[in-house]
Length: 321
Image (cartoon, rainbow, N blue to C red):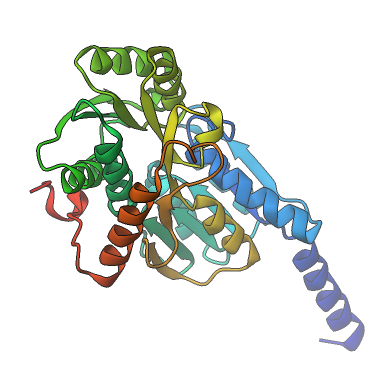
């Protein structure tokens, strides 16, 4: 190749690198779900603020759009392409094989491909702490759980929560409902409110909602009933101050932010030790979490990190016993 041609090729490659943008694809519920997807959006926005650079994004409205959106981002040269949610797994596997030169990130599931970074979380550990607070805050000795789509991942939240509640109060009673069996379960606040009201009527006074946008209905029902609720994924304490006992925070924002900065293939599993999950304490729930509760919370967190408390992972054992 002659020097001018080589120079042109190098300039073209440099231009392609400059033009390359990261991309994020949100799953059902959209980036304004105030929960899981929004956490991803927060991470992307943080990267944008710090770098001054733009990024590409797409909000899935139906299942068929997952593969279409991933392929479109790859064709546009996006790097990396971040897919939020376990439901993206099958589509991402297909598209990642078609575009081996592109880098992809899958959040909430594991995909063993040479151009994919998989990031998952130990939700059961964070949920244990949420359950611990619920068990200590409950006056009736009855705590509840409202899940979104009935899948093993959400059972993992429920299992960890119930273990934490029992750790606080061995006699605690638990009630649980799932919103549905399809992705629509993530965006049904009316159904969430209905399930919460039924649990409150049965004597429950604290409900943990691991249900995406559906959770907002649970939180409103808790406020109307003068009971307590626990948020999920993002810090949702500000949504209903004085009603939100805490939020089980899952750092999808950090995962997206770090992915936009650069990724390598492999698997990351983030728990309490890695700062991937926790419960939120701030000015909005300061009056609800007493110093004694905080002390016991800190002790449990330390025990989990040190391995003195072994939280059962429902997805590993298919059981909560």
